[in-house]
Image (spheres, chains in turn yellow, orange):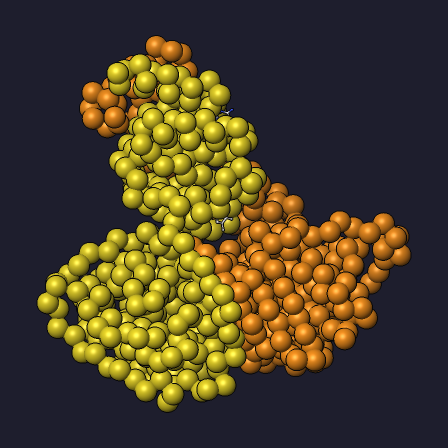
Length: 346
Length: 269
Ligand SMILES: Cc1cc2nc3c(=O)[nH]c(=O)nc-3n(C[C@H](O)[C@H](O)[C@H](O)COP(=O)(O)OP(=O)(O)OC[C@H]3O[C@@H](n4cnc5c(N)ncnc54)[C@H](O)[C@@H]3O)c2cc1C
Ligand SMILES: Nc1ncnc2c1ncn2[C@@H]1O[C@H](COP(=O)(O)O)[C@@H](O)[C@H]1O
């Protein structure tokens, strides 16, 4: 009761990175609250799967292993989690802000009548004071301690909002891949493993969606792990401009990322978006090309080692967090970077 | 066979073009500075509905929106593009709703409409990017869902079956589901057809049914601010802490010296 839960996502029997990152975060939150960290895994052929999560400091692993639970479909996974939560009454539930997490999280929150905050960039524990009506209908201040602060940029990026759910449990949040860091706590961590009879939790009528066909490809790029990222924004001006960035990337052995404005304009693939609703990167060097630096973008790159901003506007907000600022246009500066890199690397 | 289709559409502030005046000095959103638009992915949802209607003559599309009276603009826009009818849910006590209270309200309205084969929504609204309302509506109606849909491939009302292609992380999936169902549609799906001039002329002054909380028999404890588990504790304006930095021009000399500096420190190369 009252513990921190992480719903761990599976591809086959491999636990997703984002879920392990959340176990690490969940461990820290559980320590602060003085409670246990528990993980839920729902899938098919899950022998030994607990070994992947326990080292991250998971005290108890709940496993639902049955035919029909992989690939993921909405209703069976919802029933497993909702019925488990009705018994276990967690205070916090974390999920990846992935296709699966965003399909499942809202259903669970709706079924349990609890709040859910999408795409959090930070999670903290703190207190909250709110005016509530007492028995006589007078407004009185009520103090809530040990609340989960669900922190995310909001509204066009000019603000960061801290969301709390004082009166409803579990407090639910989704977090994108790469936002939290995964760290093994102890290879020999001691944990309890419970395997359930799935049929007791999941009615057979839940298996109504059939996956007829499925293709999953490994990512075409390694944006998350690249030591140098060259990111293009709206200021790149079009697909031609991105060609220049790819040329520079080839020279520097870098990966190309993008802002949402560039993705929305259709100049570059969606899976290269960096930011709150894209990938989070922490490269050694981040070269922001024609990116203004909205908070949703910065949320996904602010922990980069060295930030270089190329922008025609000397007052672009991104320049505030840059180590090097080049005042100039992409058209002019990027070819020069290529030229002088080639010249000096010979 | 004809279908009864419901499309959920939201009017949202256009957060794609946020200017410096988007926030008031008090740190609240200056809605006046942001134009209100048809949530982009809801247009993709409408197009999937229109395609179903094309393929199943006699089908009807009802648009449903919750918002201020001005939100009826999206209903009219939907009619201009081919929807048949629209209902606005608007009432004081509904204000301040988070996704849970919104989905409860929409689900109540859908129950009042009663007769439907499919409910189509956008994947997410650009004001919050939560993608929660679709699945939450589905759960409240006891239906399953297909999220992140790229295309509805087929729908067979007699067999009560729908087949759709959807995005998953790193790939695509084709799934078959039952009817009725909730489908949420991605922005990468087919764009919405443009307005039909004749429909614009015929519906210029169209008025829409408005339902309040009482009309949909909403439980006062589950709507608006009261029915929203999430509270905003604080909002903070963003002030980046300026770092010490080096500012360069785009001259050849400056660019070359930067490259040399980065190479000498083994930062690149
Ligand atoms: C809920 C939500 C989630 C979001 N999530 C993300 C996210 O994950 N990632 C993300 O990136 N955004 C996200 N956004 C959008 C974000 O708020 C900004 O709109 C977006 O990051 C802006 O992209 P940009 O900097 O490329 O474009 P702009 O803001 O248009 O900036 C373009 C920049 O290019 C410069 N420029 C113009 N021409 C040139 C030239 N020729 N040479 C050099 N510089 C030039 C301009 O001075 C300007 O600074 C989100 C928004 C919302 C509401
Ligand atoms: N107030 C509303 N009125 C009608 N539809 C809505 C409303 N809010 C959300 N939706 C629908 O739910 C989808 C997801 O919204 P959101 O969960 O806010 O990202 C939208 O694309 C709409 O189709």
